[in-house]
Length: 302
Image (tube, rainbow, N blue to C red; front, top):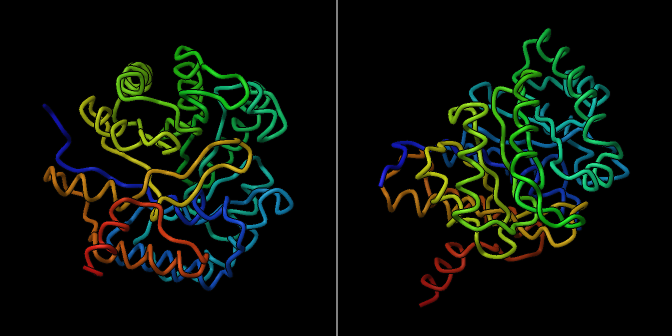
């Protein structure tokens, strides 16, 4: 068995996690949350998004969040954007890294960003051109890579093609996302290997939702294939407001616990990560969804 010596974790809780929560938190709380995540050792954090506030009101304070975090120059804070308008807003807020998202499902593309896959790529080509001129790092997501809530099965060939298109316009890294959490280990691994054959394994990241309890085993299968960048969300927060049944994300603390046990380096302190999970869940009036957080809480009561 071959595993990477070190895994880079991209913490998506402040964006993908909070965007699906009913409670809208202040910029102050979100900035404190991000600072706690950074204090736990996470250096790649998705801080928010510049999408229409009417559609995702939870992200309306992203500009203020970034302003509150200006002093943390060592952090790689990224924001999600849907178009040039979002890019301009991100630049104005001082963002240095942006993410774009394209769907492998035509129906989901229409439901999520109100345009076809082809039109979304045309939009993103313009975004990528401007981002390149401005020196911004560009990351891409392929949504619904292992299944769509509207169309069902998704062709792996289409996922590979879309990843190649995102790479061609300038995305330095492509996160292959199982948006509704239907993937299983061997299927996920085969898909990642095919995508890596198109863009190179060093550019591949993975993003698994845990609706069917498969996220962690899917990650393990992909690590064996050579993946070394994994998206996760502390406390298992998240989902997608435009994907029925998406469920929560892979919990960062569950991922760190597994990697620690396999002696794979992450640079993340599990205890401080659990503190961040407790902090944000208390403000959301909910319990952490992660197995590790629940197990630790039970042990403390014993």
